[in-house]
Image (cartoon, rainbow, N blue to C red; front, side):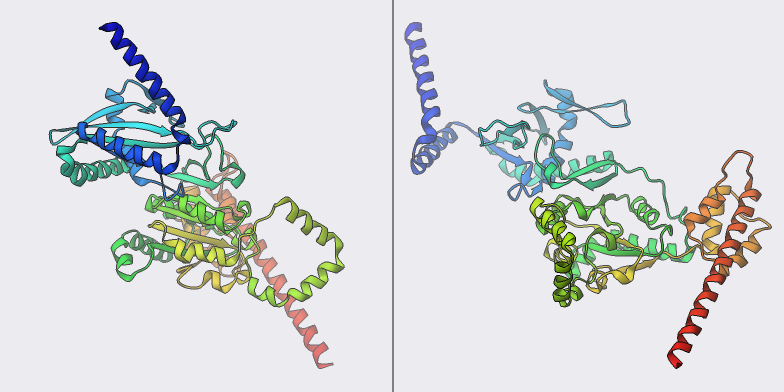
Length: 485
């Protein structure tokens, strides 16, 4: 009997192996018919239901929020019950984070109902040899439960898991600073479109060198936006808001962005347009961003040739003639086109991302442009509705100076404050220059030394401003004489 049984099992094993090996060579209709009927037989004797949650949705365009919520939820159970765990070391920490490894299973109980969670990977379809193993693998979680509890699991348990997973994510969340990787690095082992580090910038609205009333206005605007999910849905607009920060260099635009992120507890995405090849890549990067984030394009007037593009179309003929006269420029352009270098992001592509259909892919996002020269930007880029609030980052005033004096010297008043207030009426100095003068350069320097240094710098700036205005007046006078002549 045992001999016959072993022979039967061996025959079945060989038959199954041959069937599995050559099954893919069968016509598609036959394979579908066999699979459907085989599944019916299995379901007839198998009382369990399976639900899969894949890492990517929409043909790998977007990572699934449900996948990561489940990952957070089962992390505790996997640490306690799983046999095979995956260890990750958190940066700047001695602790080790343990998660369930691939092809491992843990159990969970909800209202007396037992369920099973299993992790898995779908191997790549391509059989080619790659230097980056696993780059095309698709991760997923599989939930298994008895069909008798289908309604409880699908209506209550799944919602419970997603809610708890998101709560764990918020509790353990570290705010991050992201920057976009070049598209050539998007594929491969551990590939990602965004590189990141922990966001640790200490700037707050209390430390910003700005008029107090203006800071309060900006803070109220930000808080109102962060609580406006239902309001934006009611008025039919994407839950986003645009801010334009403009002013001379050193006036605190970057510090303002960090203060906004710290106030709202948002991540920051520093978008470098020059590394993006075209509009399609720009959209893909946008899809990969998360909610509760600030997307920043600094010095947008220098990032790409997005300034006044429509005016330049009218001068196309003149430009082409100039390029023909300049063979060096022509050769550079041809070489750039052949190598594929240089960004082809257009003004219309950027506008579509910040204010078009694609801008609604995600919610609770702030978009910030910074520039030193607002007049260079195309009006379509910064109109209201795209850049909803324009914030002028101006030269330092006396109110801003008092904030810096408190930050750098720990003083609220001094006998030199009166003279400094008078000098600020005529002198123009950026907050960065004021801060540099107020910062002690050695242990021997006290607050009086630093304030006197600032007074000297303000007086020099005042004299320079007077001299410049006199030169401008002389030029105007000469121009007037020439015009009359």
